[in-house]
Image 1 (cartoon, rainbow, N blue to C red):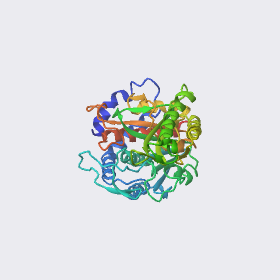
Image 2 (image 1 turned 180 degrees about the vertical axis):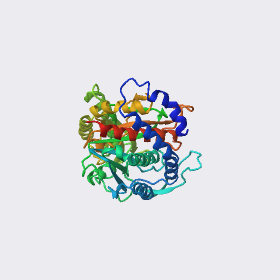
Image 3 (image 1 turned 90 degrees about the horizontal axis):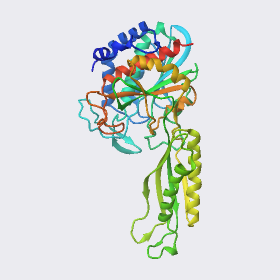
Length: 441
């Protein structure tokens, strides 16, 4: 769907039938739409180019060059190699004011594309030292193209910008992909925060979005407070004493101890947390131990994930997991070692005051199609920016309404695809949010 068709669909209610006062001046909104029309075809072209040439975390060299060259062409101050392969563009408005940051992530996933597109990815890459297929299976190609277009629109409206806009093009949102990565190393949003993207000048608010097939194109999903869960990866090793399966009393069975630990971990959420506050979940995704039916092995290894919607509850879960596993193992003479991969993902929490202030704009740019989104137990390192400054992260519907959301492939699927009309909605929203925030007292 091209912009003109989308504008016709949204336009009738856009400047008239909104129930509340408009957050962005109507003339400014018309200017936004005019500039988006001139950049729309190139925005789609950027998205297709990036989609066809995906790059894994901290390997986004080609994408970063494309972004940096475009920002320089707009006359922005540009820094490259920020927090790895990140790019920072700075637009100083024609009038003094606050500072707002807009963020897009650039990295792809180790997934083989199964969508039949003329620009489908056939790329290969190295993930933890192994050659893999690479695909933009989470929409980051769209996020990058949207922010490139937003930068162009705001640059053309520079005289109407009260303050400064920082455009943060972030690598490695999906976590490490390089074999040389060391546990505890900061990547992605954390590395960009370390590099000072929120300072000099200090950012007053930050906005980010994510394409999601659960909503139809033209819709924005918003939520005040927690919107995405924290995410922690853990490994566990339960050590016993190897013996013959016919004589288990001659050893210490780590498999039985492991089974007890798995069940014990589930009581942490169901019996030890106040679930009336926020939900949480502990999931075991991998168990490996032994190689023969009549040999009780020396040890068993587990991998799993923890999700929570409150960072205090998250810390409590991790602490209780350690105690539970060690105590159950000790009761049978075994030993449990629990390790959490650091750093994990914090809870993505939208600032309540900022969310309320920006809601009229979200409704305005979608013709009223801004709906309360459910909490999702996926994780996002946009949370690291929100821990430093007030921020709002929202979902951008990406499924063609004619196809329906019920059968749309989810993010991270090899069949994930987006309706490119969503790009226009995203650029419209990001531009309007920036102007709205900067124009408010």
